[in-house]
Length: 415
Image 1 (tube, rainbow, N blue to C red):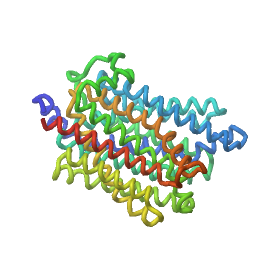
Image 2: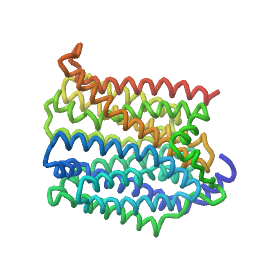
Image 3: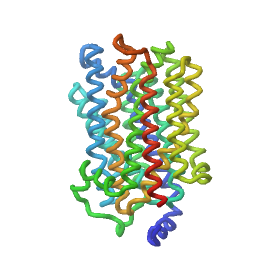
Image 4: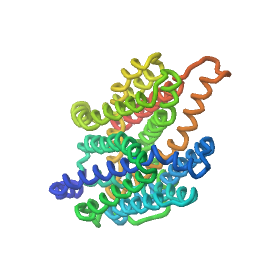
């Protein structure tokens, strides 16, 4: 770590606790706001197409694809803007922008306006990458994995509590979840306006260049360094594997185990709780004991084993046994983030996080089709064998590929 960077971290120490707490709350409220509308958005779309469920399903898929595309294009832009103007204005504009967007969706008189709302949501939500850059600015390299893990707790909590709250509110009034999401985002923006300090000093900022702010240019940063390139490939395989849960779990659990809505919801909550426990309490001690490299490999191995159990489990009880195993996969994402931040300069952290978010967006575009088509094929009449767990077995293979790439990349770091 350079002397300037060390002094910056030391100087930021009095502000760090409040700032990290704000970023935690930002991510929590962003994911909570996103989660709140999950149960109600499909129904709202359905109401605009005369309750045609098939048509609503296709439109809902289109909405999700467009949202991911906006993330792909605008995450690098948000990251580059934060490198130029600082993290604070980008994070605050995102919070207030999301609040206005949810108001627009709450008032949307037509499907077109609802679609516009999802486009804006994809753009403004792209600042989560800036939140990670903010943490990088204030945290010493050896402590970043543990802090990234704690931020991961916010993701887990938001996606557990959000849908539950959205379902409750939607039962009262279909558009109430959008108003609540708007209020949460606005309150967080106001809190940040009063509390949040800037983390990136003006002398560590870099000029804004469209060449590096577009997705292709941002990905060039990942290709420019062998370690970054290798970790990015491993991260892509990991992010792609993760899509198997939201895209096929409900269908799989219903088809193979005959679970109802209550059991499915309870299982997803258990997945979230186990992940939160690992990210909030285990990552710091494990990384301190074994180091980021071993933690990364251990996390990927546990994730692969967990998905193998999911895909092979003949009963629901055996499926549940795989949940704590898979939860240890959380070690990998925090360790990967920490290792990647070490490879770039302070004025490139926003660009790095934006490029990483773009990689994740690509996985979100490809993954749903990959896993749902795999599931459909292996339960269909033309399948060479009935294998409903095929999507999870495929996810396990993807994590083994990520493990192989990461292990090879880490030999470069040692040499």
